[in-house]
Image 1 (tube, rainbow, N blue to C red):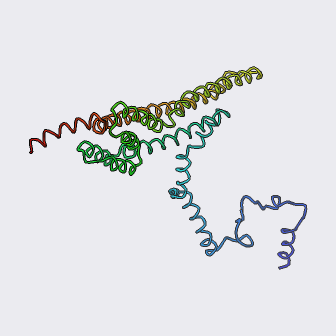
Image 2: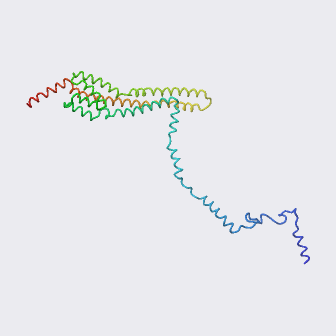
Image 3: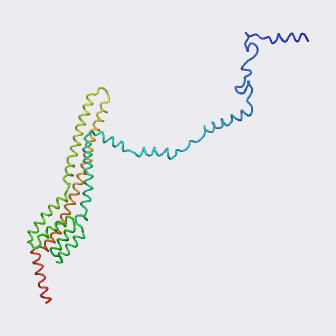
Amino acid sequence: MAPIASAAPQQFNYNPNNSFNQGGFSTSSQPYPSTGQYGAQPGPAARIAAAPQNNTATANQFSIPAAPTEADAQPEEESASWEMPAMIQKITEGGWLMIPLGVCSLIVIGLSLERMIALRRSRVIPKPFVRRFTECVEDGQLSYEEATSICDEFDCPVAEVFHAAVRRWGRPMMEIEQAVIDAGDRVGDSLRRFLRVFHAISNVTPLIGLLGTVLGMIQAFENLSSQSGGGQSDLLAAGISTALMTTAGGLSVAIPAYLAYMYFSAKSDRYLGEIDKLCQRVIDCISAEGLENAGTAKAPRKRRAA
């Protein structure tokens, strides 16, 4: 028993200067687990607790991305459909001369709406008044007082001309025609109201646009001469495109203004022609010559009836 006890201390003698590799211990041959307490393997409970996290990561890795909601798609649609700021930016590139062009465009729009309302047929030549007046005058059913009251009842251009003719009731035809011509001139001025404004805008706005183009070209060449280095052609092209914005703006205002001038001028002339024809029928009935002819035509009828 004594030799065995003496051999054990010699075999397991500890020397702090010796390494684990010298003592016969290798870290690579006996790896210790990285988890667990005191180098022990993790238990079943730890493995079960760690399993859901790995499954969740795998599911998220291969999951299909969700479709965009309506709230996410709405801002993109609004940004794609809203293009007004770009247009306003283009207009502002024309310079300060775009301000009078914008004022002229507003004037054209406002006066066009006013003329469309004022030159309606129901306001210039109302059919109920014309039919009632002309038929009664031609049939001889109206006297001077009745015809005057009917003309005063209706406030329209044709009633004003008829009233001027009725005032010369029983006078010679030339005198009545002169009174109708004078009243027609006054009515024509009211029907052609604001036409000179349309004509002036259609002539002035292209000149304003041309002035803006010339000033813009001067500014573009001055910027080109002051710049040194490359990119001069791009700078010149940008300056020319900006300068031509005023010309485009002037033509955009002048063309509608001229079309409005031609349309309302033709419409007022057509109304004046119709009023002149109606007045001629009234003159033939209320003039001295017309009343005399009507009296001579009724006399044979009375004799035949007797």
